[in-house]
Image (cartoon, rainbow, N blue to C red; front, top):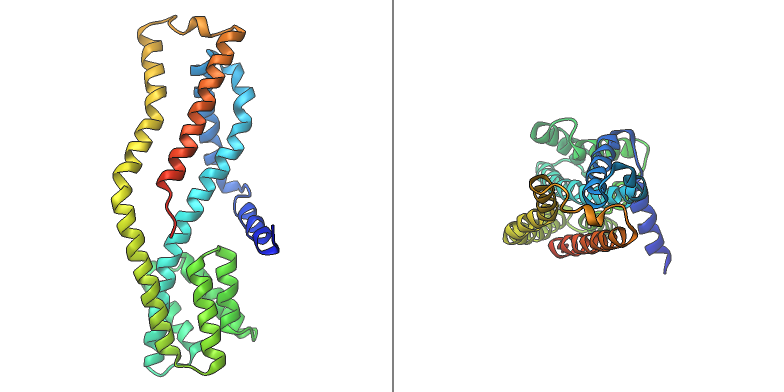
Length: 254
């Protein structure tokens, strides 16, 4: 495993590090696991043994959230670079173009938008004599956004070689836009399958709850004995495997 892979793993681990704002997500996971424990084992005390699953589940949920936020940041970054290109055409320097782009993004997305925070960092870096390409490269590494990292590389080469920055930025924005269009088309095509996957994830628990309520004692032979615990644990592991497989199938990255 090379150093780059280790760095990526470290960044992802830090991105999934629990925060105060993640308490509702943890609470939701714990409540769901308690409900699963009651359905599979007939009592809430058994939830103690499956609560450790809440952390890997939390990591999966955070990873999904990170991908969603990363995608949104990519869209906002594309719009920001279009604003930078427009400012350059108006005669602004590359540094001042980012300042103008920030003002446009505040009007478009609001001051609290992720891109506005990142542009503020770039602006502060410029004031501290840090080059624009360095700040963009750091943004790409920090967010693990491949589009931004690739843009930073092209931007740095074009700036060092004295190329046409406006044309370079426009071409990069065009490539990013084409990629996003493909992603949107894929998202539309698999939207129905994602909904089916969500429904199939809930159906087993719905069936168990329905049978348990309409036929009290139906699952009693599987509760409170070694054979029943083994059977229900095997079923739970099969469900977890199916859940992970369905998540992998419906998650397509370009």
